Length: 610
Image 1 (cartoon, helix red, strand yellow):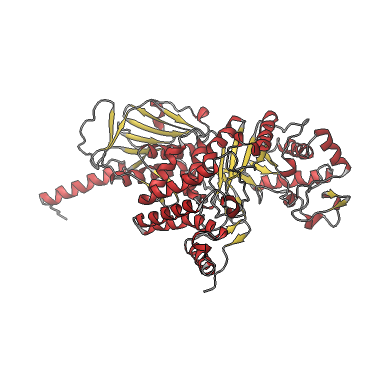
Image 2 (spheres, one colour):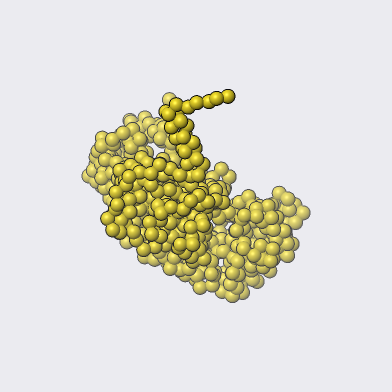
């Protein structure tokens, strides 16, 4: 067959062939970008870039995700989509290298010093390198770089992304960073989403019934507990339903009788059969969960302090140790010793809580034991600066002297009234610094962990806590201001004044409140009628200034806390006895409408009849 091509047809065919080869080889269109001044790089210039994002040919899912996040947000900022290529493509001068690649012949990443979660951001000539010690570090490095461009990740669905057609970056010395705490978790419902929690650099993977989070491998994974529960595991290690009828001696002896009553009893920790059952069960959990690095062997929760065993053998140990934690630490040490050969990288976690809060005087926790100290006391003032906190302060300091791995279980909400105004923002940083300065390696912050949204600044508190978990010495005021300005928009000055007013009121040394405070009794003497009227006006102005429905919804949800105080104290509009019932129903209706479903740890928002 005799085929002839016109000049135009041949040119088109040649152009198509070149484009196909270019696509297959990873090349892209080259743009005319002017030279940047000395010491400056144009990552994107006027909406165009010759840079490529480079990942390893065998990049992990997490490294690929990090590169895609970088690509996505640079496009949001500049409108330009920087292509992602593998490192087996031809190397060029202009690259953003993400994670482990073959480009490392030109620079060095000290992964040993960075650890799994640390990262470095450096320039190699005009190459920008973002590399982590491990997968999580690479992802965190990308988010850190995006934050340096002005991005902020305040809450799920609430971000700040600047708009700038040109990204002009200064060449700088390598920047390396890693978290202060190895374990960082927020037990706040609004942080459960794994994508958002990764942006907050949280790594705790906990499930308690329907509550908690898991972080998949493509997001860098996290720190998992083995077994079905991460705390209060005695009742799962030795279930009363299985053992009590035939072996009541496995459980607490209280007032001369053995009991396994739920929320009123523990295990007999000097019974050798109990030890064997627990060792076998712990090994079973760990074999079923090979990725887990921690297993909890911890006392049951209890409505009473005196739930521990008082048999003669347990009493003898506790007398020797001068603390009820004596039997516990000896028991946990034996389990830790029994598993270390098969599971050398696993820690056994236990609690210093209620009766076990004081450390033993003789026995020290083994190196593969984590002691998780539970806080309490006054939430109005820092742990290190309030007489009401002297007890927990001393306990943490004493545990720090005998344990090389302390975790903290901290409480950051009012469990009796989730909606009660709870001005504890000023305590968060000094407390986190106190933890760090006392050998604490991990922190778990419990808040409103159940279903629904929080009407008492839960998103703000979570954001600040996440920043402090990474760096206890960060500038909290800057973070608070940035959050308020984006989350509340034009309404932020009025919300900020309200927040500052409450914190000023509880800052006096004579004011104290804890994690189960009643709003009406707390503020009765702190807020006079004139001040109440002023607070009313702040919220009215905030609602008037809200620039759209999304911001107005956030303002209204945050106002619920203030309205709840007035409802419970029968002040303001709730002082009218003839209107009270109607206003109460309206309040609970608004709670449901705004997604606030819990009144307290133990109660839902009441159903409202029409």
